Length: 315
Image: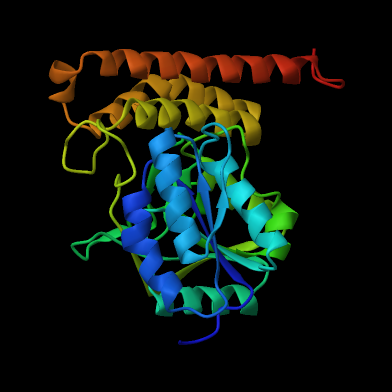
């Protein structure tokens, strides 16, 4: 056994990914002392539930088994609640398709223990060694997201950390309220980053700590990586919709209206992440994007009506 990780949890949300848990999580959990591992199995079928239940029992993991698919953020919230019951006071939030070795977990534990009001993230690499995430920027003028390494001079940005791997103390988790259940998938990490800072916390990228993330490894058929293959309908829907959900929750009226106005252009950019050929193979992809735009616009319209009706709103 290496460095003791007593007081640290690893919380993973599973959705049809038992093989990834066996491949990525089981080896490190076997060689770490005191680590609390919590797997939240969002329902994807009886066979998968049986497989992950058997694996968790064999590895000594805590299993949370909701009756339905609760989404990523709510799943993590359930997992952290179980980890707290098990005595953990620092929490690593990890994707099933991410690999964090014992050294990385120990470094994340040290970072959270030494700065209890800082949420930290490692540098996330792809399997080929290229950088997948080293911090990202949210551009407040239009709602685009870009790598922090390619920041545009003079831009109005907010930094955020990828939910592929995060660590934070229980104190900070309680202070910021955990993930917002409204997102289901995507943008919940952008939202959490903002609320961490808003609650008096800070964000930190750990340049010298790395984990490996095979992006899209947890998606079912129709998911994809950055190779130009089509991504899932859920990826498109939630990325396009939740950009405006975030705006409705956090932005002033002028920014909110600007984001809404730019949504068709940015939705098209999101769809193009899967390449143009997908529109021939799967014409319904365009409909998914259109519906997501309309859904997001309805969220904005409802929020603007709520604000206009609030006491003290200008007439």
